[in-house]
Image 1 (cartoon, rainbow, N blue to C red):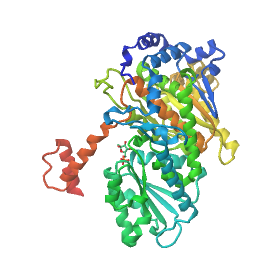
Image 2 (cartoon, rainbow, N blue to C red):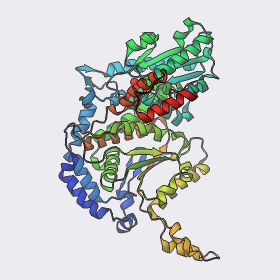
Image 3 (cartoon, rainbow, N blue to C red):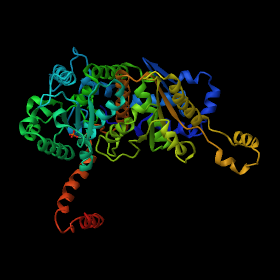
Length: 542
Ligand code: F6P
């Protein structure tokens, strides 16, 4: 992977010049000038159709962005990523979540060893365990079948499993799935208060097995369990997913109950590994495999398709176009399905923990913008919450609209209403409403309300990308998640940053430990002044 400052490339210089015209582009004119624009800027691939035509781009923009990708040797970087080169240099690690969805006969080598057989051994262990729990063959300590599963983890050890189990609720079995993530005793209490220890298993998920939140919550839950049962009952009810087997054993979970993962799987990209155990318990292992197979098809598409027709590459380049030239700050993710209600939160970690960096791969402070701010909510709820600002506010917010053609429960009529909103919003954001149109409308009203005209004008020209997928299935969800993973990768390559470390979350963790000590002593003088005053107030009133 080459370390090239993107702003020193000739493509960047040309993009800057091009931007001087492009910032005045009116998408309505672009459509009027080119009757085939909708088709020309759409990529149809398997069950996906991705329409980029409602973006402030022309063929020239696309060409220049592709030149940028070529100038930073993106193709070579993609190969390094899939081949297991140690591209996470600050942690001296390969980045191989893609290996988790590889075929059995592939060879992917890390430090001279083919890792594929080991991945399949762990998959076998997941499948045997899940089958035994789901079928009721593996029972709780009192002989009753398991009814409830509690995933205890945070960050990537929580967000991926929650997002997918919610997204694939339609495919779930009888097991009730719960998640404990926050180090908030009230949250823990709310989850366990209605659980029966006889019929509940706890999956403690932590790659490092040193994360404060997870260890405190797992310890609390174990006390709760022991209060209601006997010590010997614990073993069958607590399993762990981790790459730190010795720490898991110290915690008291035996090695047979550990589902291993590896240091070449980053936390926020880990749902495809044993971190997906809860997913597999919820929808069954065969559906979990379909999720992996979907991701694998997207991997192949990403690795093998020319940039012009490559969905993750195009999404990444267009995002860079807005972020670095239009200087947009945020991107909205709007899924038109309630099932994907945790998808924006999942992407917040995946995108912002990866590309929220300000030092380049040479160790130099960057002089250009990097990671976007990600936010969003499902439509149509979001239409009644923050769409006002997208339509008429002062900021440009590129938005991804994600919709499915077929509903899962078969109510096509109501689904048409949902999707009519999807199409209407992307059109309204593009076309807006001129003062002339507003004036004509107001003329029809009985009382003249000319003063209302400026308030009712929509400038339009707001960019959106529409992702239309045939149906929400484990397979299509796998493709969608992998699409965004690769988008993140491409952006990191071009911005010349390390996308796969997360040093920025360390400082807060250290300080929390220090402040906890001060909460238990009388004198808070050593703390920063404002923090000391907050801590003193807290101590007086707790
Ligand atoms: O928030 C930092 C982080 O390291 C994430 O990258 C990770 O997903 C999360 O903490 C949880 O880490 P672990 O799985 O090691 O408990």
